[in-house]
Structures are given as structure tokens and as C-alpha cells.
Image (cartoon, rainbow, N blue to C red; front, side, top):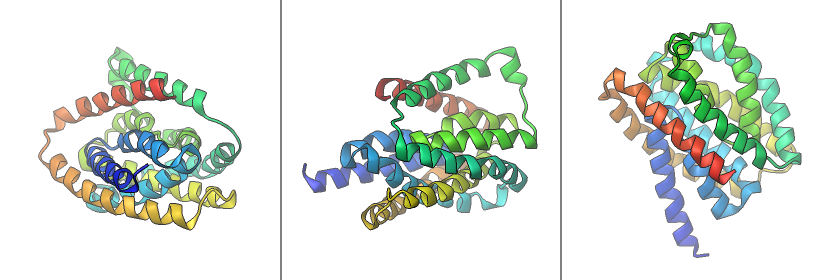
Length: 242
């Protein structure tokens, strides 16, 4: 495989993915994961994606730093840290294809749920982010991408635009730091993966900047529809590629 072609495809995918994630809060991993599996294989793809996502999410935290909801991140972290460790161990020792397909079904059901009477009026309190952090971090460590699962709950709490993007990104950073520690413990990290991940992350920083510019010009009422569009696309992708 031509290495220059592979590098070019990864750069374009990273820029597209990070721009989308900066607008919708997620979706970047759903774009990057199949590209990375094609380029480096499934066993290296998720640790590599985790490094790149860590940089991408840190950039979204920075660009939305004035709108963060730190109490949400605190309660999310209480559940995220222990279950990210468990999920990392599961990833190191077991396949996850079936779980990816279940995740796809869940995402499509989430969109349908949001349009029911209960879904339109649903709210989540601060303590509800503890179980959300636990479930999300476990799945993230196993399948690499759970932003679409987290999105409806952050929206239900009332976060929108920059507050949603930045707060969700900071919560995700917590997951990724713990996951990387576990992956390193099981020798799933290498200097090569770290360097490639940092290079992809640099491209994603640029995409985050572009996405933030788009987000600032977006009418607030349009925001949930964009998120639902990405939810549907990610759900179908997981069903097909799982």
C-alpha cells in the first residue's frame, strides 16, 4: 500500500472528522475509525484513535473554555474512571464486533426516542452523569467511539452550542487519559502509535478551529437537527461495519 496515499487519506479524514466534531460534539471517531482500521489494522486503530481524539478534544475544550460546565464533568468522571479501566482490559483481551452492532441499533433508537413525548421533555440531573460516565467510558474503551451515546444526555441537561461542545469534550478527555494508561499497561501503545496519533491530533486541532467558527454562526435551533443527522449516520455505519 502506498504510504503517501495512506497518509493523505488520514489527513483529509482527520480534518473532516474534527471539523464535524467541533460542530456536533461527536462523529469524528465514527469517521476516523474505519479509516484507521484500513490503514493500520483493528488492534492498533483504537489506541491510535484514542491519542488523536485526546488532542482533538483538548482543542475543543480550549476553544470553548469560557462555557464549560465543570460540575457535569466532575460527576461524569466519578463513573468514567473506574469503568474506563475495566473497558480497557476487555478491549485488550476480547473482540468487540457484536458490541459495535448493538451500539448502532442503540443510536438509531436514541433518535427515535428524542421524538417521542417523553424524549422531548426528558431532563437529566447532575448525578445522572455518573452512570452515563460509567457506561460511556466502558464502551469507549472497547469500541472506540461513544460520542453519539453521550450527546442526547448532555442536550437533555440543557447544554447547547459552545457549552455542550466544550463540556462533552472535557468529559471525553477524562476517558481517554484513563484508557491510554490501560492500553500502555497491556503493551498496546508504542512510540510509533504515539507519534502518529500526535500528528493526526495536530490536524484535528485545525479542524476544531474551523468547526468553532462554523458553530459561532449557527442558529441555536438548527443545532439539535445536525446532531441527530450525525447520530443516524453513525448508527447506520456501526450496523454495516460492526
